[in-house]
Image (tube, rainbow, N blue to C red; front, side, top):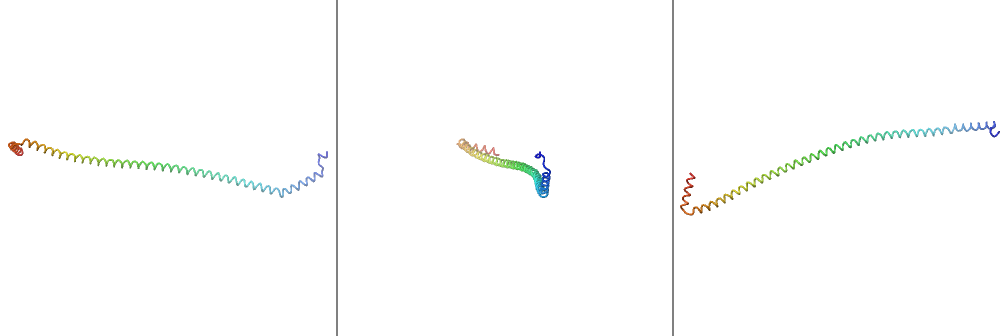
Length: 162
């Protein structure tokens, strides 16, 4: 049974060896290990803080970008509305100007037509007068072929004049 139960001397030297190892570890090992664990813990905490700050900044940037996009859309809509109003104003001005030009052209055309009409009327009157004189001359020549008829016509005209 001695194999299963340790001897008192062995137990003593095991305790002494354990104490020395424990003392060395407590003096030199544990502070290094604890320092490394604390350093790692600080690094992790700093990383978590940095990540939280980055998330916060990212959220702020996202809000800012959404505000900027909203402003840009609003400005774009305003610009489109202004462009539409400007286009409508330009079209209306062009229509008004075209209408005025058409009215002016129409008025000039009517005046020109009236002038041409009056000229044609004068020319027709002159033609009619010339033709009337020619016809009257031919009729008078035929009727006044003899002297007796000429004398009667002159007397008749004198009576009608007075």
